[in-house]
Image (cartoon, rainbow, N blue to C red; front, top):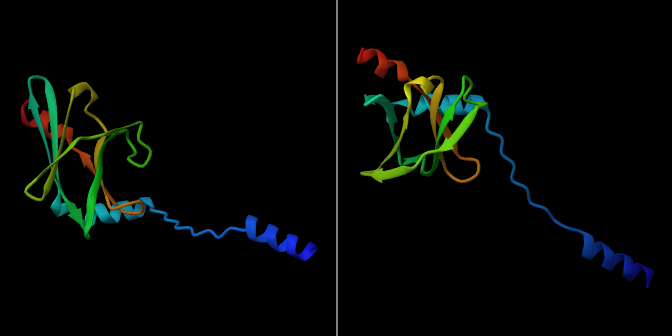
Length: 137
């Protein structure tokens, strides 16, 4: 009887766990960003004292669909001071994202796009606001 109880306890309280771990390094993100740089276009235009940033991302990278896009503010993209999701629009197999920002806040900005589920690809690019500000001066 004791053996049966012990077996029952072991069966009831034992568990099998399947774990899928993933660790994406900053180096992975840099490599992916450089690898896919020619597929991304970022423009900054000034209109009525606002800067309008638009980015075009591919809808898929390595068969992984775009999942999300973000605006990151801060000197270090890996530790942003502010991270805001950006609305996306799909058109002609390209993804368009955009936001506006006041010129006084237009420093240290990045846009990112994430592809695939869980451990997918993430690409990040710095927004060069100064090109728009200098070109119109």
